[in-house]
Length: 256
Image 1 (tube, rainbow, N blue to C red):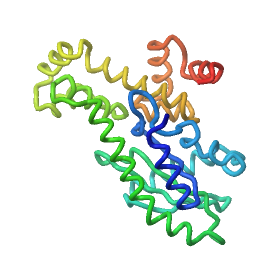
Image 2: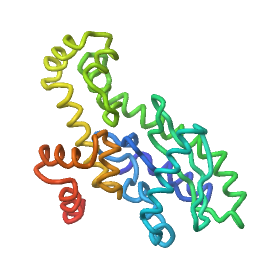
Image 3: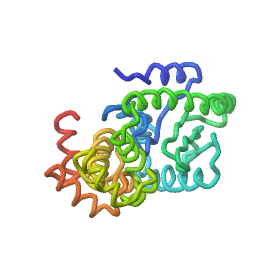
Image 4: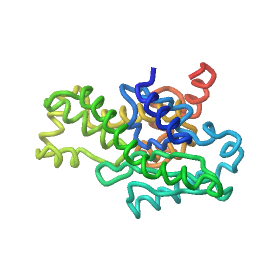
C-alpha cells in the first residue's frame, strides 16, 4: 500500500532502530496520500508511546520542533544527534530544498550507555537513506507534473511555495513576466486566480496534517503558510464549512 514502507523497514531491520519523520511540506506524499505509514511515523508520541508518549507535550514541541529546527537551520549539516531531558538519543538527517529544511529523518531511540556503536552506524547510513528515499519521491512527483506547459509551471510553483508568503509578483519574477501578464495567463490557463490556487493548496496540505499528524492547529497554520491561527481558521472554514478542529474530530470519528 505504501511505496516507501519496504525501504523504511529494511533500514530498521539492518540498524535495529525506528524511523520517524518531520515532513513539513508533505514531501513524501503523492496525490494527497502518504508514501509511507504517516500516522505512525510522523509522530514520536505514536511511534514510542511508552517513552515519548508520556512526556509533557509542550516540552516536546519546544525541544523537538522549535529549538531543533533553529539549530539545523543554523548549522545546515546533513546529519546530527538529538537528545531530550530523558536522555533518549536520535540520529537526525535534515533534507533541504530552496534554502529551507523541508523534511527531517530520525533514527532512534538510542541509549548512549549501551548503544553507542548502533548510533554511530545509523549516523553513517541515515543521510544516504534519506537521499535515496527523497530521490524516489522526486521521481514520483516528476511523473505527476510531466510537461512544460505554463499551467504545469504555475502548478509546480504553487506546490513548492504554498508554505511561503508568496504573491503574484513572486510568480511573475519566477516566470520572467510582468505581473499584469501573469494575472491574465494564470486565469486563462488554470481557470482561477493565483491566490485561489495557493489557498487550495494550503487547505489541501492542512487537511493532510490534520489527518496524519498530531501537530496542533497553530503549528499547522504556520506549516501551511497562513498568517496566524485565526487567519487559518477563517480560511479553512470558508473552504470546507468546518473549523480545522472540527475537521480533525470528524476524521477521527470516521476512522480517518
